[in-house]
Image 1 (cartoon, rainbow, N blue to C red):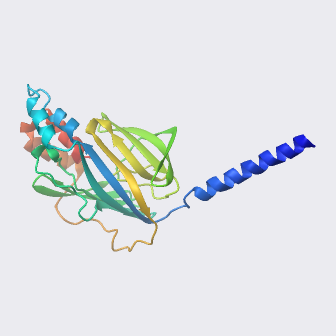
Image 2 (cartoon, helix red, strand yellow):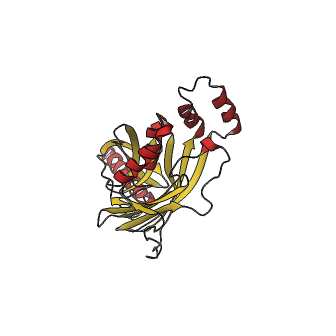
Image 3 (cartoon, rainbow, N blue to C red):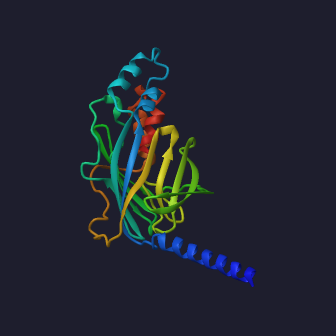
Length: 256
């Protein structure tokens, strides 16, 4: 009899634990707004720029004048069919240091998941481009690692982009839209975290607001010279030859 009582208590405890866990999980989400924090390690970025330039004293002096991390805030408005990713109001931290900026650092990205198309407004130094193309196609490998981001349980996935840039992403299937920051998409849910060690960049959701987004908010950008990614790459390679080995790194940032 004592054994039966102990078994009953154990089963009851397990059921209570399951109920508490399920209650803590967010509901399935179809629409809303996510706030992302983008961080760049500026000191590592400077090291990359100064490679092969001889003495490291210049980079060391610049580091003393520059915070280690540059942090910017972006917002992603979404429903199950479309999303718009853009800088939050006053979300871009300005810097007087030339090396503190990268091309295409304040992108607006409209993704149409139903029609598999994307429209991006990219400011590349003094020029603005309106890039119209198909949704990026990523070959994701889903792993068994999990972590919690912005209150959601997320699963880790990995891929390689632009032939050599390793990407770690964390997505949640509690948000049905298959998008994420910048142009990232194609996982079974919303991407809430992205890390690209080679580019010294990370994106992590910090806040979720669940509300019915006005359709007028999720509209594609319209400013800039119309172009696609292939033509943009060719144009930049031709006009930025003087950048030497660093040109490829600039193209990585443009193509995120």
